[in-house]
Amino acid sequence: MAPRPNRQVSQSRALIQEPAIDMLFLAETERKQRDEKRFNFVVAGLPENDGCTDAEKAVKLCEDHDLGARLTDTEILETVRIGKAPLGGKPKLLLVKLKRNSPDSLKKRQQIVKGAPVLRTSSDDEIRKNIYINLI
Image (cartoon, rainbow, N blue to C red; front, side):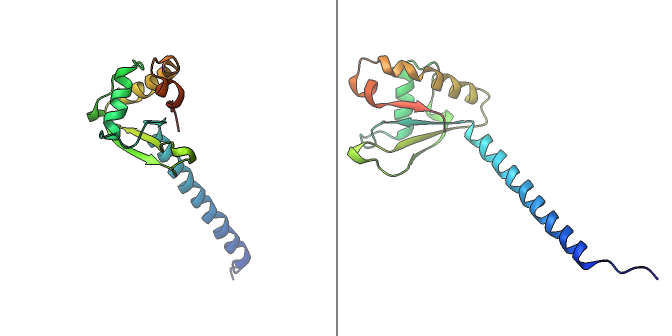
């Protein structure tokens, strides 16, 4: 007669397997989020309400200050204002998401972020003191 399986052993195996599956799921979810963020950058200090869309403001900022890459409206997937409005009337952060289907999107994002220190030498006091571009 075959020995009956020990219930405690089978339950402990199930407990071990479930967390392993959860960890794999979490790791895959995190990888996807990282891949999505690779095409994003954040602009701090860009005014919110001045008659233009946020995408137009991002394009104009890149054009006017020669940040290393020319950006067009069609290359921007989405712009989103994030976070709460900071104290002192400063504008919310602007998240710029570039389209992933363009092979140049990642290169442009890198060039824009790398060229951001040029803003510190701008002749416009508002830009020189208030506008920053960073990765998220």
